[in-house]
Amino acid sequence: MAGLEHYKLAQDPAFVRLSNMTNNRYKYFRWTPRTAGITFAYMVVVPGILGYIAYKTDGKYDFRAKRRGDDMREY
Image (tube, rainbow, N blue to C red; front, side, top):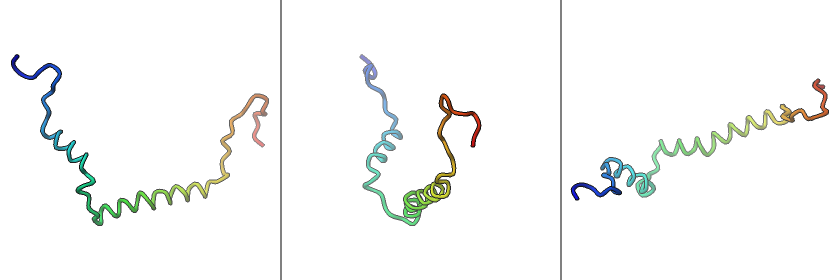
């Protein structure tokens, strides 16, 4: 039969290179000022901001739902 068999696909070379680069990314990683800054932001700054927000709003809101027999008024 001419051409490719019915269960094989022609692979795009760009997608093959992208897949290989993605799978081997750890081999070529280097610490640069940019990667260090991004890592610091995601490991320190973001959790710090979330922790600060959680600390400041602790006990401020009551998320308990109304149940059968509860009064509709808030006290």
